[in-house]
Length: 215
Image 1 (tube, one colour):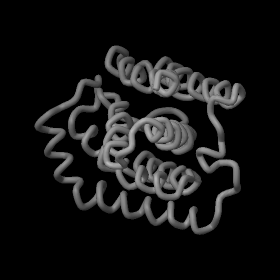
Image 2: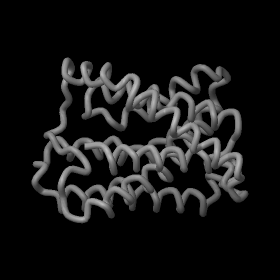
Image 3: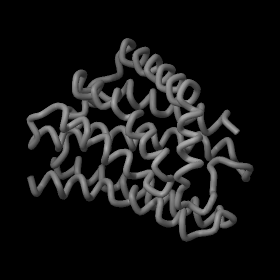
Image 4: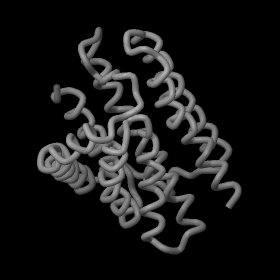
């Protein structure tokens, strides 16, 4: 149990820290915000992952990444992305908007991507890194480690979704609930299929659609 806790904490602490500097740093300091993002959201988790794989604490086979993606997995990921987007961003969007207005959030008002230099590149970066890193860490590794110690599938699903939703803590209850709901089907997908390729595609395309096209 202690090793699993250490692995999870090593990989998620920077994501929880990520929201802290969105609160304390003014939204006008885009260069500083994106520098910190590159360090704490991308560089540290990536190097930690590579190190854990190198010392064989983690295995790519446990994540289903030891084989190339199959067409049915990619198509399934695409369909899942469409379903989640229609459900959360269209059908239930008014509910989440009202909840956000009622509850508010802690962040300073910085809304990505907003109008900023290199918006297109930042959208691609944010979509790709969230699609790959968040799925590998929060779906693949967190679930794999929880599964070693929790027999109940229900509790694994709830725990992993809560851990994932928690990285958006500064955005308030509306985003926490929305992220928790978003994670349910991908979590069940990984538990059933033991592979991440389709989920990475789903997550990256979902965020690309939200970041790149929504006002």
